[in-house]
Every structure is written in C-alpha cells, then in structure tokens.
Amino acid sequence: MNEFEKAISEIDERTGNINDENVFESPDDKDIFDYSPNSKRLMTVTLSRKKWVNKVLKYAEQYPNEVTIKHTNRDGSIIAYVPVDYLRISRPPELSDAEKKRRTEILQRLKAE
Image 1 (cartoon, rainbow, N blue to C red):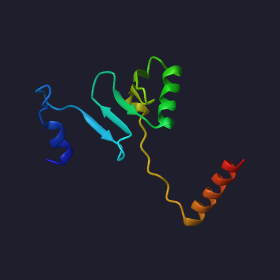
Image 2: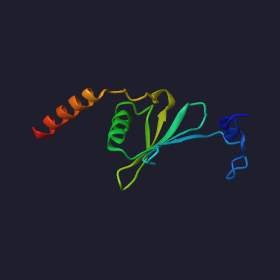
Image 3: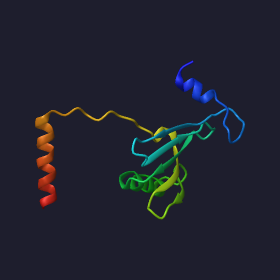
C-alpha cells in the first residue's frame, strides 16, 4: 500500500468514517485545495494570493451556477467551491539564463513606465 492509499484508508478522527478527503497545500501555506469526492465534483479552495482570489471572484460573477464564494475573510482571502474540472497543474518552464535576463529587463522597463 503506497502513502496515498494509506492516507485515504485511514479513519477520520473527527467523524469516525473513512477519510475521503484529499488536501493539497502550497509550500508557503497561502493556498489550500481540498477535494472531497461528491456528486457535484467540487473542491473547496482557500486562497490568499490576490492573483487567484481575483480570478475566482471573476469566475463566481461570470458563472454563479459553477463557482460559489463561501466566505471572504478580513485579510481578503476567500473560501470558495470550485468545480474540480477548473484545476490545472503545470510545471513552470525551464528558462535559460539569457531568457531570465531578458524577462527581467522587460519587467524593469514596464515598471519604469
């Protein structure tokens, strides 16, 4: 039995039921994705990075039947229900030193304007 199988087969101490949750946390604890299997295939997300908060707020406005904001905290972070199909995970591109330098120069130019 691998680590994942072991984790999901454990008994949840809070309910006494088999643990059916999968929680993914960012290394800096700023964002949390909690996927609990259910008929609606929703995941609960807790987000504090403005980039993601704004994106989810925009989706909640555009697609109210799909994305629901459950709570907005005083610090601006949110708790929302988002369809699992919205989740995309991709590896950051590997950039050469020359490309990193070029992008840094572009960013500095834009900030200076």
